[in-house]
Length: 75
Image (cartoon, rainbow, N blue to C red; front, side, top):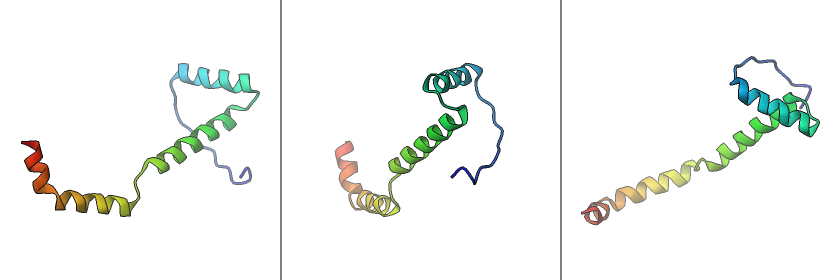
């Protein structure tokens, strides 16, 4: 993975950056490595928490089929 790197620039809260640097120092790692792990973890959790299209389609169909029941229960 190291051979396919791209530079980018961003901004971050200075206190948050200092916390990240402190963690990196404490773990004996480069800030870049820590950031890559954090971003990778975020993307994996985000993907895992996103329902698949088929699941959403079945859910929407169920809502439509049971709309009247939902209205009655809401009363």
